[in-house]
Length: 97
Figure 1 (spheres, rainbow, N blue to C red):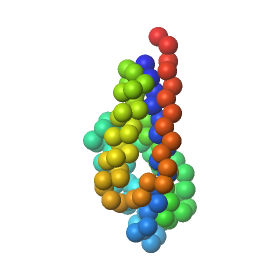
Figure 2 (cartoon, helix red, strand yellow; figure 1 turned 90 degrees about the horizontal axis):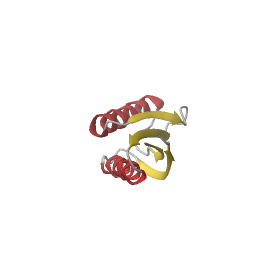
Figure 3 (cartoon, rainbow, N blue to C red; figure 1 turned 90 degrees about the vertical axis):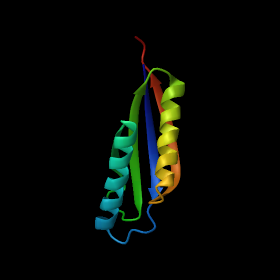
């Protein structure tokens, strides 16, 4: 079993307030969770209205499957055109059975 984790650093240039940011981030998180069945949450930059850091986690059978899914999530977020991706750091952890 492999646990895959992605930390997406986002720039939200269209947001002019924390309220707008919360709406955009909630929309992104809800769509990612519904489409891919992953766990996702805002994990940093809570008080900055044009920045967000999202944590996304999945479980897969292989390292390849976990990374492939997390890269699909990155492309999906990019295609939503609600935020610019500044960085994506993916880590996997192999658990022995």
